[in-house]
Image (tube, rainbow, N blue to C red; front, top):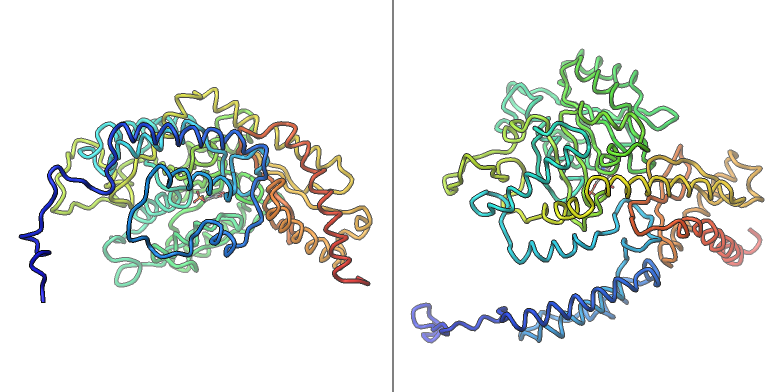
Amino acid sequence: MSDASHSPTSASVDAPRHAPLAIDADTFRALGHQLVDQVAAALAAVPHGPVTRDQAPSALRQALGLNGPLPEEGADPAALLTEATAHLFQHSLFNGHPRFFGYITASPAPIGMLADFLAAAVNPNVGSFTLSPAATEIEAQTVRWIAEFIGVPASTGGLLVSGGNMANIVGFMAARAAAADWDVRAAGMAGQGTRRLRVYASKETHTWLQKATDMTGLGTDAIRWIPTGADQRMDLAALRTQLDADVAAGDRPCCVIGTAGSVSTGVVDPLPAIAELCRERGLWFHVDGAYGGFAAAVEESPDDLKALHLADSVAVDPHKWLYAPLEAGCALVRDPERLTAAFSYHPPYYHFDERATNYVDRGPQNSRGFRALKVWLALRQAGAAGYRRMIADDIRLSRLMADVVRQHPEFECTSQALSITTFRYLPEDLRAGVGTEAVERELDTLNRALLDVLQREGEVFVSNAVIDGRYVLRACIVNFRTERTDVEALPGIIARRARRLRDELRQATPGA
Ligand SMILES: Cc1ncc(COP(=O)(O)O)c(C=O)c1O
């Protein structure tokens, strides 16, 4: 039975309306000031605390009161914001900490933090120009500036996406649509007239490629993992041989992927030589520059990196080396029409100005946030010269790290490229046995356990890589807050913890 007092026709709406989420201008101002004051104080304290704290998920849920049901009634926003600020700064990992060297997550620029607030206040939907006139044009300029900074033609098309994975996937989908000699968007990968598409990438390529081939229906088996040489770079002769074999078997090469700064060690594939081969064979050349792409702008980087202009598409990641707060990736495609050819549809319910840029036609997203603002404002704050200096400083600090690690008697430095240094703890008593199976096994176990305690305890935060089957520690600097003293302190901190760890392991397994 229906209750007449709640029927749509008889329900009344307050006039003026009092929406539970509404906040008047004076209250909003006071809340904002209070929040900025609290955040500024907390950010200033970050370098003096640990990078992260050792917290089990259940303890964290308990501390943050996350076990309760959805509240039926609302609460005071000032109290909520104060509590959320305190909780987040007490229980987070800070990639803005000067001693955060893990994975590839940048120290966020303060102007980016404020820009995200401003972007949310305006809340443009950057899917179409009509819904976001200023934001669309700012995004277009941001893309042009990114292209200019890394040395690709200004006519390159592109858009901002959530990160490196999506930027690569967008480039990959443009390649797929261009490579298939059937209407792959309609027919997909099976059926009459289709052929097996093949993708070529070194075995050091980031895992976005599995997701891309999986999501687009090629399947991960379409990937030809090309071996690397001793320098971890793609072996061109092996690439050539694989291409020949696939063409002879009737498959269709879709694209070749070069990496401009690999996730594990930062090495750059021989991009000019791959580009030349792709040109010879009429193949799409995609470069994953999610990590290293922006370093193309600095003198310190390898010459091969300065060949991004030879690619058909490039992925770069402003939330890595442009220090944008998450999320911000950028897909660049030399011929902008290729993006439209891969993504555009014209549903009857849209009435968008066809003369303008409508980003809905250039990528997978429909409604889109204003990610470009934080990147655009930071580019203007630092300028190209400021960015070149910050990136070059990160690279120099990484080289210094390799030096201090090499000079320490208890470490072996295993690689240094761009701003990534890898090394392993190698106590003096095990040095003579390096290369033997028993000692290598012991070193792997020790360094794995060491990484585990370092990541949990948070005095410094590093991650890992596996190089030629050896488990190593890995420090990556995309952090304009890191100083020389942070780098110089690293071997001492890790060696002290490693010695203690060995004692703990010995006590746990007496006689070992
Ligand atoms: C070379 C490379 N490609 C792609 C990615 C994925 O980027 P994201 O995590 O922003 O999606 C990464 C991440 O570290 C990377 O290093």
